Amino acid sequence: MIRHLSTARSFLFVPATRPERIAKARASGADAVVVDLEDAVPPQEKAAARAGLAAALADDAGIVLRINAAGTPFHTDDAHLAAHSGIAAVMLAKAESAAEIEGLDKPVIALIETARGLAAARSIAAARGVFRLAFGTIDFMADLGLAEDGPAMAVYRAELALASRLAGIAPPVDGITAAIDDDALIAEETRRALAFGFAARLAIHPRQIGPIHEALRPSDAEIVRAKAIVDAAEASDGGAIRLGGEMIDAPVVLRARAVLARA
Image (tube, rainbow, N blue to C red; front, side):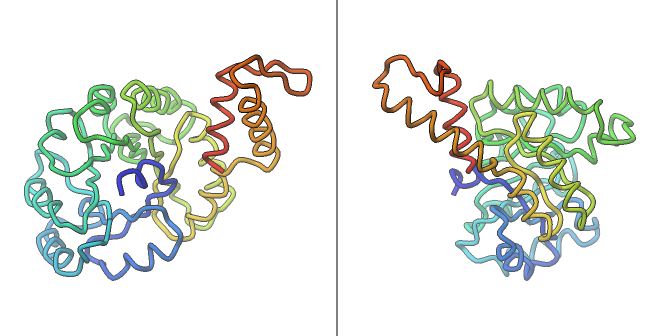
């Protein structure tokens, strides 16, 4: 299951108060379903949401559970619920240190949503149990006082991609597109994430899954070229690679294999 989550392209949120929506979320084609105990559940409803989810969740559900941040009054009870066999991994909201992650018993997606979290991203990515970083862009912008997800966010995305690579974990997951029905915007923001080294998106509605997956898929021309490069590399038996008058070196072959993996 963790291998699947490490290569997942889309993570679709479902409120913990509505466990009956898990099946619908799966039917959307989302690669992973994230049941949310944080932003989607008001404080006065968190205990009931926890209990209802525990009762409704099948042992083989394989969901990701977003739990409240360390230091909140809800964190400990959320972490206890995460022991349920139907929960494959935990998404820790507002992750800010390796120490708060290493106390969790399930594999962790660390959600970077604050300046402190970004400053600690490299140690968080290397923490025991972390297999992926995710970028909570809305909260992050609020923390830094940024009005829009524009050019100023580039350096922060680059840092999360770099932290993930240095730790040897899967590429990070980019934040949501707030617009539900704007396929062009969803695709544009997905391609931007891909350009920074991200490989997945968070989603808030089933309609967003198709545009996300389509934008992450290489073009037909990219796939054809990548296959030609890989075939030439395999036929070279370790020797020099020449393709269409061009010399192909090892990093180009590596990129071609990555394109085929995305396809």
